Length: 137
Figure 1 (cartoon, rainbow, N blue to C red):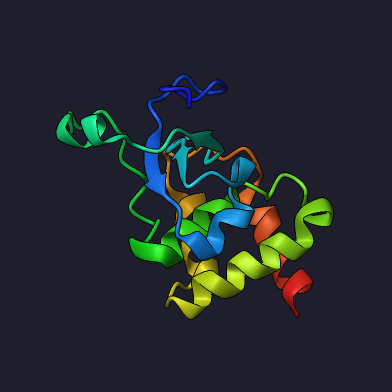
Figure 2 (tube, rainbow, N blue to C red):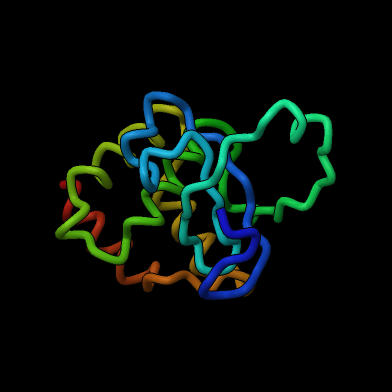
């Protein structure tokens, strides 16, 4: 995994992907890196035992609108696919359903991310929100 986002040059947040969501992760990776600025996701190497001992805290923090837990991971994976709703429709639908099942209000999170000045998402979140609502009806 790159340590920094290739687009934004910001440190990536390291996210462990639950087994039931790995099919939606880039390259099916068990760990992804997520850019807190553009919200792109990248496959990451799983931590080794020696990495677990060296928890230096180099991982970036995600925006506060991203919830903790599996629902937040599902939301991040969905955000990473918003650049093409048509191509990624089945995956996005599954990820939104997984996020909502975990208690995440996906549309509220999108609104908060769109209003967060530290976020410059790779997709227009306001426009994608409206398209996502009609897609999921």
